[in-house]
Image 1 (spheres, rainbow, N blue to C red):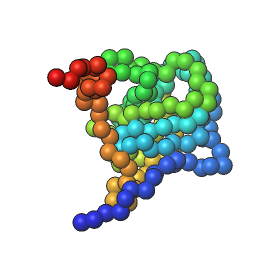
Image 2 (image 1 turned 60 degrees about the vertical axis):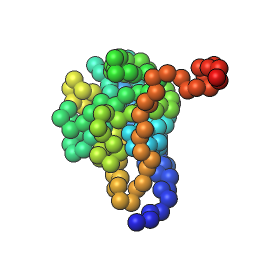
Image 3 (image 1 turned 30 degrees about the vertical axis):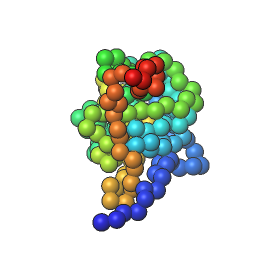
Image 4 (image 1 turned 90 degrees about the vertical axis):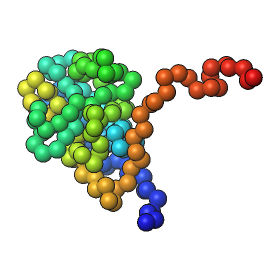
Length: 156
């Protein structure tokens, strides 16, 4: 069955303002979906040195400890080193990867969340329908070494 080419799904936002809750100055202007597990959070701001903990958190239903998963901030977090936001950020564009086995179709919101006390600092709704809102699949890195051109290998 032929399908239409996916249209860009960008920027779940209210273009007239940033999302602000007042908790530790948390705000962001919009979210762009890069692929099924990767999001760009634009103009992210938080006084991260002040709360007990702060995580990028995504899930469904009520925003609490049971209904979401902690996301990775790419370039900062790794599976071996995944920690709370402890530094101040001001108008930074950050790329986040959703939790394992979680896609943009599985979540209803993305939040900046205090896990210790189950407090939502700021969130945006994410409501995508996999039959209408097409996004590229997430393709994890599967190489363990650099591509051939980077290995400086001689041809035989």
